Image 1 (cartoon, rainbow, N blue to C red):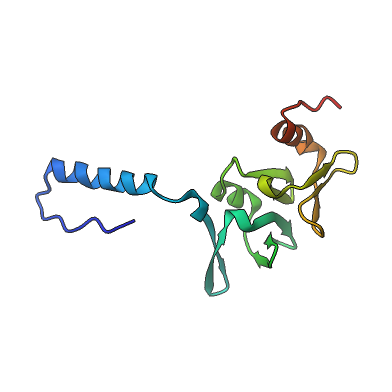
Image 2: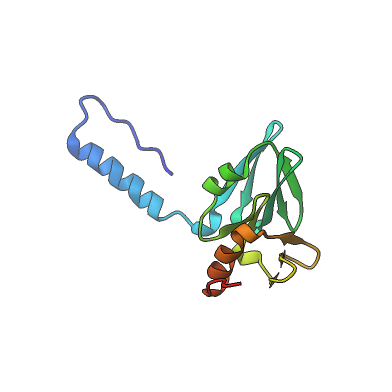
Length: 143
């Protein structure tokens, strides 16, 4: 977003309206492909594009964001991550996993595994099975 400029008191109603109109216009022009999650690892802030994330795993009191190129760990909770991610792109599939729906290659309903890439597979639980089937296929899970 761009700076709002300098406003001298008393501020006129028209100036405030104009400021909010500019801010809203800037918001609408944001490129959705530039959506990132900001995560602090030690003293460094990393911006990870949503499209680059394969899945997010909770293990050993840490959250691990897994991309094709790297696996980054930090302290946090999956609930906090779910709130920071777009609902339409990310699915909670297990108490310890969040999957990027755009990166799911295959689902094995009997083994309860989701293949994300050639080497990465994650489990899904019975708790999330019906929701996962509904989200991916549009069919209710009757089994």
